[in-house]
Structure formats: structure tokens, C-alpha cells
Amino acid sequence: MQTLALNGGQPRFSQPLHVGRPNLGDTRRLFERLEGIMERRWLTNDGPVVGEFERRICEITGVKHCVTMCNATVALEIAIRALDFRGEVIVPSYTFVATDHALQWQEITPVFADIELNTLNMDPRCLERLITPRTTGIVGVHVWGRPCNTRAIEEFGRQHGLKVMYDAAHAFGCSHETRMIGNFGECEVLSFHATKFLNSFEGGAIVTNNDDLANKVRLMRNFGFAGYDRVIYLGTNGKMTEVCAAMGLTSLESLDELIRLNRGNYAEYQARLQGIPGISLVDYTTNEKRNYHYIVAQVDASVCPLNRDELVEVLHAENVLARKYFWPGCHRMQPYKALFPNAHLMLPNTELRAAQVMVLPTGQSISKNNIATISEIIRSALSQAEKVKRILSQKAT
Ligand code: T4K
Picture 1 (cartoon, helix red, strand yellow):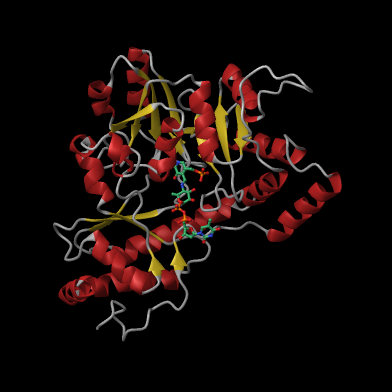
Picture 2 (cartoon, rainbow, N blue to C red):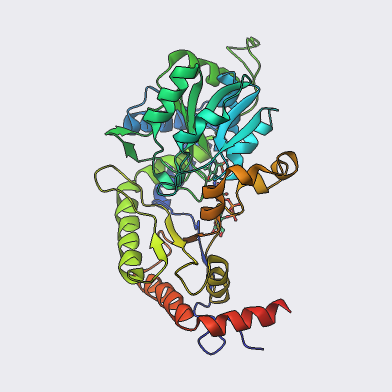
């Protein structure tokens, strides 16, 4: 049987090229910091490195408070609880499942909003029809680091007495209407997961300009402790370790360089993929700050000779591990699929884009030559679309 590796059967890359390969700062700086941590023997529980990391995040974002957490999922859960969301909360389905799970985990029903076709973000025009007497809040997501329509969402929230917060897991270092992400809604949640723009191994943060909310989430992340033996609130363990903060601080020192590299990779993909019918890259505005962390291609099968899934199969056969984020959409994952079997009927744009998007490798571990080869694989697969389809149908039988 013929293989999908179209260049004589051997994958074009001998090693897999991953989406989400972590970017690393200066490892010597990290080791110096680790030595300091070991000498101090202060490893977690609001240590000095965590404090320094939080101050740096505040400086960069211009936000008053940064409360770091062990990861963004726990940060979302804590923020949702601190805002007293209950009943139903409006949220997109086109997001990483952590956003919706953070609600459902607390027995709050996520009510899925559709997305705008151009931005892939929550469409504020569908909020009106999703609101019920049980609605208590809205969670927007800045998908791929492109801010959602905060103005319209927050205006709707004000009119209906609903609090708004954002999942800004992709959007550290981005700005919106000249303010840095972190300053919108009641609070925003950042992710510093290894695969993210700012990498602290695992990590996240709630950033907010609201003093009371900041105090509340600080208590909640440490079991509600307000001093030795004094628990004054319900809490959990959401703390970031010193080692993670050291990694975060070290990553911060290379962020400008990383943006330059990401932007260069993005420009290279754009140039190499330009003019292919049915393939477009999600674009990044140039009049705001962007981290260019994701290379997001949309494959429009009504124009392109292969659909997204077929192209991803070819890329995988060549060891390019493109990802279908966020397919099939949270509404088609469990437990939501069982709870809301007809949700897709209200989510036509989510369904469409979830079937079209493929995320391509970028970051420090990808060279310009790699991008040229990946683009060449895509062009060559499309020029042999009939053959690809034949091989795929043989594989399926
Ligand atoms: N909200 C949004 C909008 C999010 O996108 C996310 C996370 C969250 C909330 C929750 O944030 P955290 O709680 O994680 O802080 C990956 C990441 O694990 C996840 O953090 C991220 N979004 C999501 C978009 O991507 P998976 O399930 O695709 O992970 P996985 O294990 O397949 O890894 C992705 C790729 O990265 C693989 O190809 C391998 C590569 N990789 C990964 C790691 C960890 C490496 O090469 N080295 C590594 O160390 O979710």
C-alpha cells in the first residue's frame, strides 16, 4: 500500500515537529535561580521568587494585582468561584476544554455562545438569546491571543447585571485598545503552561485591578489562611511553586526575542502559503501588541482540494504534528455532548471553524527551512489531492 509520505515513502522529517514545543529562556539563569531556591529552602507557599514573578507580571501588564496559581485551570476555577458565578454562565464552546470544565466542575452550567467567523471569538450578538433567569456571568476567551470584543461583551454584562471575566490563557503580552490584556472585565486568567508564550513549566495567574477580588483569590489559593492557624474563607491549594516562578522569570527575560522569532516564523508561513486556494492564516493586527504564538491555518474545503483532516493526515505522515485545536468543540466532548446533544444546532460558526482549523509548529525549535518544507508538503499534497484521497480511502478499508 502507498504511504501518505509523498516523497518516496520516507517522512520528510526524521523527528516529529510538535505544536506546543516549549520555548526556553537562558537555562544558566534558571539554574542560578534554582540554586538560590535550594539555599533558602523556601520551595513554595508564597516565596520570594513567586513574589518577584507576580511583580514583574504587574509591571508588564499594568495590572494592579497578579495572583499566581499552579495552573490556569485552577485559576479559572478560583476566579469563577470568587466572582460567585452560579447557575448558568455564558462561555464559548470553541476553546480548550479547561474553560468549560472550570464551570462544570463546580456544577455551573456552561451555556455555549457561538463565535464570530472572522475573529473566532465569542460573538456578542448571540448573548441576548442565551440569557435566562439563571445566568450569573460571562466568560470570554481571547482565542489565539486575539482579544474578544470586550466593549460589547461588558456593555451587555452591565445592562443585565452580569459579571464578566476572561480566559486570557493565550494572550499574555497582547494589548487591546491600547491597554494590555489583564485589564479587562472583573479579572483575567493567564496560563504559563510549558506550551504557552510565557512558560513556567506549569502555572497560571489571576490578574485584576479589583483589590477585594485580589484579596479573596489570594485567600482561596491557600486554603483560606489569613495567618498562622487562622482560616477565614473556603479555599483550596492553588499555589505556584518557587521553581515554576523561577522558570517564569527566566522565560520573561527572553520574551522580546521570542516575539521577534514568532513574528518572523509567522511572516515566513504567510509568504510560503500565500496564494494557495482555500488556505488562510489567522491574521494578527499590527497596531496592537501580539505574541504571534500560534500559527493557525484555516482550510476551506469548498475551495481547497483537500479538507483539513486530510491535510493533517498528510502532515502527520511527514512527521509534522499539526493539531486540530479546538476540534470537535467542547459541546461535542463529554460531559457536554451527553448533557446538550443538540447544542451544535446553535453553534454553526463553531462547527465550521472547528472543522477547518489546523495549528502548525512554530517557536524556537522550528527553523525557516522547516517552515519552507512544511509549506512545500502542503502545496505538494494539494497538487496530488486525488492520490492523497485514494491512499486515505485505501487506509480506511
Ligand atoms: N484556557 C485555554 C484557552 C487554554 O488553551 C488552556 C490550555 C487552558 C485554559 C488551561 O491552561 P493550563 O491549565 O494548562 O495552564 C495543550 C496544553 O497542555 C494546554 O495547556 C493548552 N491550553 C492546550 C491548547 O494545549 P494538549 O492536550 O493539546 O497537550 P499535549 O500534551 O497534547 O501537548 C501539546 C503539544 O506540545 C504536543 O504536541 C507535545 C508538545 N509538548 C508538550 C509539553 C507539555 C512538548 O513538546 N513538550 C512538553 O513539555 O493541551
